[in-house]
Structures are given as structure tokens and as C-alpha cells.
Amino acid sequence: MVMVKKSNGYTNLNKACPKDLYPLPSINALVDGAFGCNQLSFMHTYSGYNQIRMHPSDESKTMFITDKGNFCYRGMSFSLKNARATYQRLMNHIFKDHTDNQLEVYVDNMVVKSTMETGHVENLASVFRVLRRYQLKLNPKKCSFEVKARKFLGFMLTRRGIEANPKKCNTIIDMRSHRSVKEVQ
Image 1 (tube, rainbow, N blue to C red):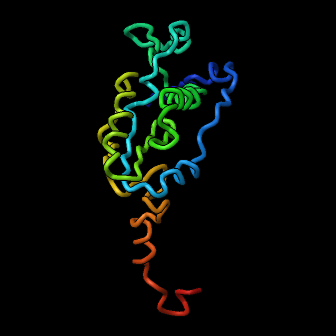
Image 2 (image 1 turned 30 degrees about the vertical axis):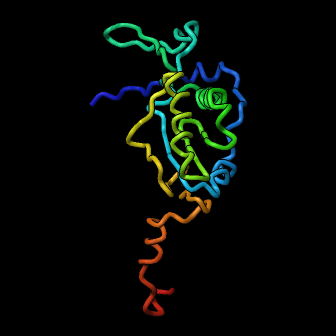
Image 3 (image 1 turned 60 degrees about the vertical axis):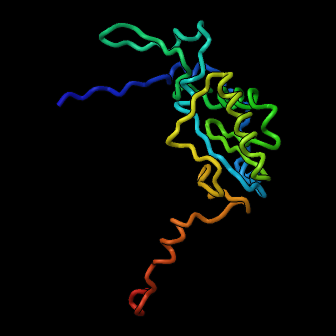
């Protein structure tokens, strides 16, 4: 067995970078924003951070070495200190006309929402146009369209707001009650 020291990744680069204090949205506000919506569509970008092109002058800062040569990331790496803030800023910018009433965005998670079922397809089409314009791709395995409820950021989101996750409730419901004094102790 040969022990290999773990790579420190971007530790030094991240230490040298000032922290981007761009705020992430309040999860409570995002969840509350879906209250009263009859139609919900949940979307997740495919390797979201990697779809964001890095500035050419910053690519060399992400260099890694292999036996085939030196390579640099062209897309933003998940490991970079400010990747999350940068991604959220971009999503807020490109969807600035949608986030008040049609869309909730938390980094690479999105919920298209509609209070009336008849307008949902138009809301989706509008969001898809923006995604296409900026060449952002979705992960089909993590998308659900025109549903009444789904798990979002750890919460079961429905038109009534947050509800208990039925899978977690069943664990408690199915729990056997204590049958003797010894079991209680």
C-alpha cells in the first residue's frame, strides 16, 4: 500500500481570494413564495457551476497537472470559494424579470410557479427562453414539471406552503409503541 498525500485542491487560491458577500436568498422566503400556487415545476441545472465560463485571465489559476499535461478549467469549479455567490448573482441577473411572481431560484435549484394552471406553460416557456439564451442546461433526472408537490431544498413544497414529508412521517407512524415498563426505561 502506498500512502499518497491528499491534494489541497484550491486551498491556497481560496485563501488568497476575498470572500464574495453576495447574499443567498432566504430559503424561508423562497418556500413562502410558492404559497397559493396551483402548479409547480422544479428544475435543477446540470453541473450548474461548470456551465459558467470563467474569465480567460482566471483560467490559469485553476491549473492542474496530469501525466498528459497541464490543464485549466474553462468553466467555474465547484471547489472555488466564491462559486456559489457568483452563480447566485448570475441567476438573479438573468432571471431578474421572472423572480417576483413566476420563479424562485436558489443557486442551481429553480421552481417555476403559477397561481392559475392556464398560465403555467407560458411561465415555463419564458424561463426556457432565458435558459436557452444563456445556454444553461437542465438535469432531466432532477426536474419535475406541472406537479402539485415536491421536495425542494429539504422541504415538501405544496400550494399550501410547507408540509411534512410523508416518507419521514411514516417512520414515526410505523414506530412500535413501548409495551412494558422496561422498554420505557
